[in-house]
Image 1: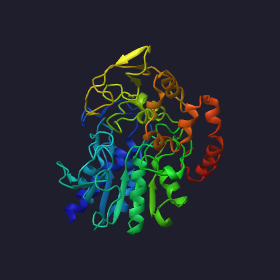
Image 2 (image 1 turned 90 degrees about the horizontal axis):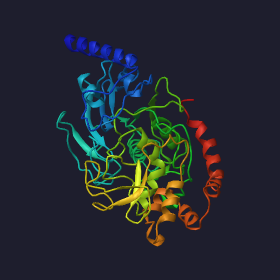
Image 3 (image 1 turned 135 degrees about the vertical axis):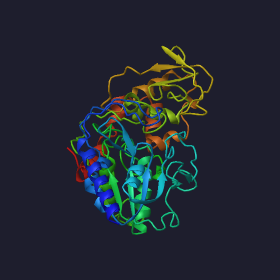
Image 4 (image 1 turned 90 degrees about the vertical axis):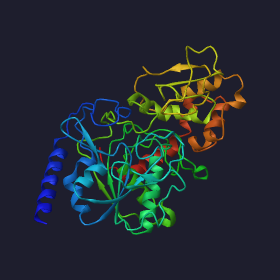
Amino acid sequence: MHLNVLKNTVLLLVFIMISFGCRAMSSPKNLNEAHVVLKNDSTIIVGANRTDVYLPLLEGKKIGVVANQTSVIFKTDNTFSHLVDSLLQLNVEVTKVFSPEHGFRGTADAGEVVKDGIDTKTKLPIVSLYGSNKKPTTDQLKNIELLIFDIQDVGARFYTYISTLHYIMEAAAEHGIPVLILDRPNPNGHYIDGPILEMEHKSFVGMHPVPIVHGMTIGEYAQMINGQNWLLNGVQCDLTIIEMEHYTHDTFYELPIKPSPNLPNSQSINLYPSLCFFEGTNVNAGRGTDTQFQVYGSPFLKDQPFSYTPKPNSGSKHPKHEGKVCYGVDLTEEKQLHQLNLAYLMKAYQATENKTEFFNSFFTKLAGSKKLQKQIEGNLSVTEIKQSWKTGLDAYKKMRKKYILYN
C-alpha cells in the first residue's frame, strides 16, 4: 500500500516536471514515422501536459478516453507518450477508449467505417464512433465516471472531430457523466471565414450554424456547444477545460503529428479549408499522392500547368480518378492563407468543359447551403460571394466572443 502511494507520487512529480518543461521540441522519435511530420519549436504547453492540474480530478474514477494518435503528452527529451499509456502508468483507471474518424491510430481513410476492437498495446476495448454509431450508447458508457476528450482539431467545420465532440458531450450530459477536455491549438485559428451553415443541411460534416473556418480551439468550441444549447433537448454537459499556456489565436503552430492520413504537413492543413470544397466536385484534391490537399486536378481540366496521377496509398485506398492523369495546379509553395480562397474552386469550374458534371450532392453538405454552388454557376465574383457572407459572419463573431479562452 505505502509502496504504491510512493510510486504514484513519484510518477506524478515526473509528469509535473514534464508539463512545465515542454518548451522547444524537435521531431519526436517514438511514434510511427507515418505520423511524424514537422519540427515543433513552440513554447505552447498543451492541456494534456498540464498533468498537475487534471490528475487530481481523475483520482478514484473509472475513466473513458476519446483519443487518437494526436493524444499525446510531450516530454523534454524530444519524445512523447500517448495519453492513454501515460494515464495507465500513473495507475489511473482507464476502462475504455473511444476513437473518432480515422480510428485510434489514425490510419483509416476518410469516410471509412472503423470497427470496434482491442488496443494491442494496452488491451483496452476500443469503441469506434465512426462505425455503427457516432454517439456513444448507454451500454458503451456503462461504468464510466468521467470522459476525457483529447483530439487535435484543424479548425474547419467539415473536419469531423468537432462532430464527435458534440455527440460525446450530448451522451455524457444525458448520462450524468462529466467531460474533461485537454485543449490543443487550432492551426487555422488566426482567421474566421466562410458561409454559415444552414441547419436544413446539417450533417456529420457540419452540425452547427458556424462558418467553415470557425477560429476556435476544441475547448472554446465545446463551451459554445453548451452555451448555445446545441445539444439535443438543450441538455448541458458538465464541462471542464484544461487550458493551454502561452497560446493565442495568432500563434503559428506546426502540428508535430498528422491529425489525419491526408493532412501530412502545415501546408496541407492551411489549404484544407479552401481545397476541401473539391471533395464535392469531380476534382481530385491530391488524395492518392504525397501532396494531399496541396495540389488539385482532374482529367477534365485541360491546359493546366501541372499534372499527376492518383494512386492508392496509405491515406487513400481508392482515390478519385485513380490511375488517370489529372491536370491542375501545384500549391505546395503557396503562401500561408489568412482567408478562404475561392479562386481555386472557381477557376477549376470555369476550366471544366462539361460544367453540369462538376458538382455532386456532397458539395452542399460541405458548403452548408445550396447558395455557393448557385453563385459559382451564376458567375458571381469572389467579392460578391464573400459580401453575401458578411451578415452571418458578423453575427457569428459577436457570439463567438462569449466563449473565447485565449487572446
